[in-house]
Length: 530
Image (tube, rainbow, N blue to C red):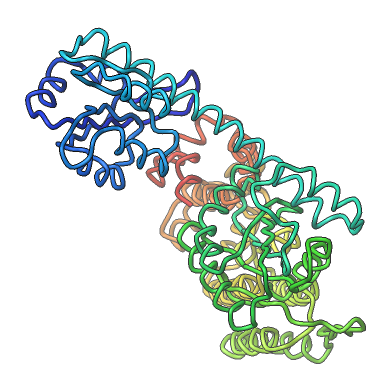
């Protein structure tokens, strides 16, 4: 059984019983229902020395101990225990009314001094009081920690934003921070760019990541504050002396390895080391500038500070000859050549300095536009080789050049697949498919509407379509709508009820029913599985 102090926090309570009489230890366990009182774990020891050793591994919340025991008495044991665990509550038991022991018990802030033979009712009340004392201390500590975390979060944010050193000095000296940064000789900012679209960037989430990486910071004797800014987790590190470049590399590597256990896709970037907390805004700015280069790095890697000259000239990559080369490869139907072109492009972009992410995005957008132009000339269905959602929106969502290249490579491969398929279909079937791709969101899409579009009877259209494709026209319409629905479900911003309407279903319940029938999952279950 666990204790909840009136909120969602559950405390697990541990009790240590120390007595040299076996009958007393066993009797207490038999006569008192500690579990009903809220005690989860109980250990026993036969003397003070054994009890002290057990405390180091068991870390009890409450100690119920005899006073007079061999090897080490209860008073000496608890003096040693409370040096290490000052919040541990103690209840003394004794068959002697010794004033010196009573004085010692008072000095140790004992909850109670129960005389032997033990009265179970009296002991039960003493344990309840001890539990109340432990809960009260924990609640006070939790409030203090919350206050300090909030102060840490606020001060850290001001440190990366404010260049006013006098303002910062007053803030640091007055703030009840969890770390002492006033005399830190060297500081630097570290930012973590989490590519998870569901990342909350809340104070609680930031603190969770801080707990993960704190052991690494401790190994390098670095104190730490954390905050959030512009959808970036920001960690400020403080030390007595600057880290060498080699140490910085080891540190960033360990942080990356640590975060890789709980983050799926991210980058770690270290800013320039500066002297004193007043310069941290400069360190943060260098990290943000360098973050742009992480766009050209594989996921789950780190980037150390490297000096970027003030008059950096970023390279232009919008080369007309390069676009012409890709356009010719597409028009000549050279699939392997086009894919080889994309491989070389990726190597070129990842091996270059001073290219901005949006330059790369614009370049790939131009390449996709070339595909669209070629597809329009050949009357290909665009949705069959390009994302269903807005093209620039899809490109903007790519967090690295590798993701851009994957999008471009997949679209190019699909383009040639659709192109090859169009050659084997009759012009009527191709026209039908193209009409469906352009009107699948129309709730009035029907065989009659399709037959009128191709100027043929409905029965002939159905027979021709089935003979060439192997499936009925209605099956094809349903499958096409559901595939488009899957594409839309991959974007968490699209509501399921809206998706049903966008793919031609007026009844969202009916849409969910046929979706489950086709894929074995409801739309919401499918989204959760992504």
